Image (cartoon, rainbow, N blue to C red; front, side, top):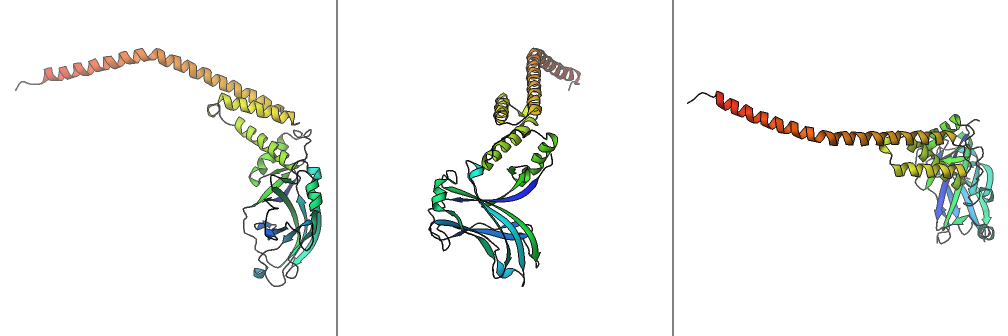
Length: 293
């Protein structure tokens, strides 16, 4: 099984429907060397009873004369309960000085939004953008970082942070079918399970000295949680058993060392007492050898 990797941008809007502003922008982000941001209209853009969502090229006044960007992109309102019920729209556009934004005036109607459970959860609406830059005309400098938009990377259907990509790719390369029976489609649940799996593998790579019995119990519970979800983790189950055996051996060694040390304490005391007597005798010897005045 090959390892497929794509880049995704996630923007979480909090309290999106109590906003007084007609529209809000995401922070800027960079895809394929081009700067972008998203613009969200909670009350619709010249369209009643709907939400509008657009992709923008920011700071166009600083771009060179004649710049153009041809991009294919999709915008998704994520259903946090079921990925199949997410609302996705796709298009492509030549962005330029006259048309620096493009998107969907009717991304979703408010009626549909409130009819689908999972799109707005605890006042939060999650938007995912996937952008494929097809062609760029002009020299564009994309170097700005963002805070409220989070870049994640799709590795074989699991959204992970860029710092986790190599670890997840290594899992798929070393154990190609470990997720073959995992059937959840919700992207948030998939990310949560993958984070548990990564944390478990990191835990089992630590030395027994760094692990407590409570930590190993939690590792066993995490393993059961992942297996019930459909992951095939025979190699981790074996490793957990080996780590538990090493922990038992470490504790047995520590117990024996403690017992030996207790037995040694009386002898250490006798040695210290004897050394004190020797020092006293040396002082008396020096006094006996001293010449009379």
